[in-house]
Image (cartoon, rainbow, N blue to C red; front, side, top):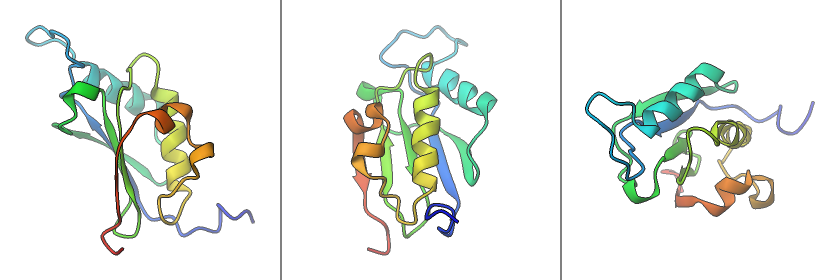
Length: 129
């Protein structure tokens, strides 16, 4: 059994800001980039142990589209930005799968998707630190 397979997999949430407009003018009733990113991710499906959730705002408007990855009181939480709904769904899925495979949320920097390495907005310590 691999080391990753032996980790007790606590539930992980991928939070996607659906209010993100990426500083674009979105017409009334139009689809915001954050909504489009959420839709693409929902269509592709989540890695095992990951739940996708839409959130109203991550207050990261100047760096949208934005997502947060969290996994309980013993894991670090991350916020990533500058995502494009047309280009970064695979990056998000790769990153959240790597996160879900950890016990503490600490994915080694060199093994994170490149976009995650360069666009981490915040890293929040576990509640139980």
